[in-house]
Image (cartoon, rainbow, N blue to C red; front, side):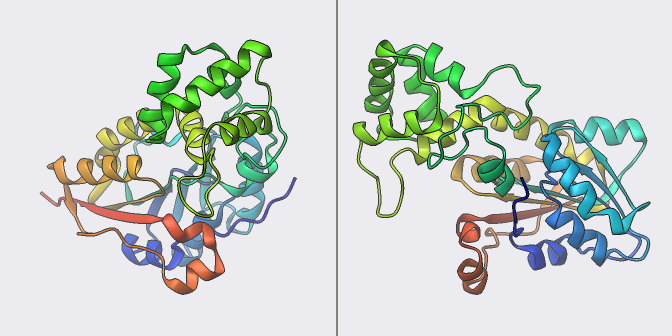
Length: 292
């Protein structure tokens, strides 16, 4: 299934990464290739890009999108956490690294893996189908205390106890198999926290983060990313929720190899939010590898 996807903060990413002709860059979250394409255009005619993407179908679609730049990029089916190890093995340092930590439109609308609470799909939520544990496994196997902990730690869900209790009661009658089943269970248990937000938003976020070990992968990446940046090279990370943003902010501030360039996160313009509502919660932070 082909799904359109507009990357967020493109102009700001190019500006803060200082993308230039001949530069070498890495995109750790290629998705459908939107940011990668913009970087390759801005670094023409001889810039080079290393791209990393976990999802196999997204990678295929990105490869087609980037085909006009043949010879100027290499794509890896790998999580961004593996980027430092892979590029170190290749003997490569780059002038700029980008991560866009948002959920891609393809995974949400086209993967059929239950990322959306608006669709009837198997409750899977794996960004990489080679992973062993699914969201279905977690909701059906975790104990009540474990579910509460998961919803609090990964979803910052204030109603975690009530939702966990509803899940446990529902699965006593039958296994929870689909995204809509879970969404309805949460919807019956709690009201929306704020106008326009689905009651299951934070539950689905928590399960997705847990299944894909998103916070652990980000922590590992942040500890090693400066190693593959040239002196003066820049690291730009777009996050969409407070858990990731706090991790990035702290890592940038505490790593002596990095100098923070964005005192406050860069936010999308009103025009971009009108054009692309997905951009509303995007936050871009940028740091530079110290020159000495």
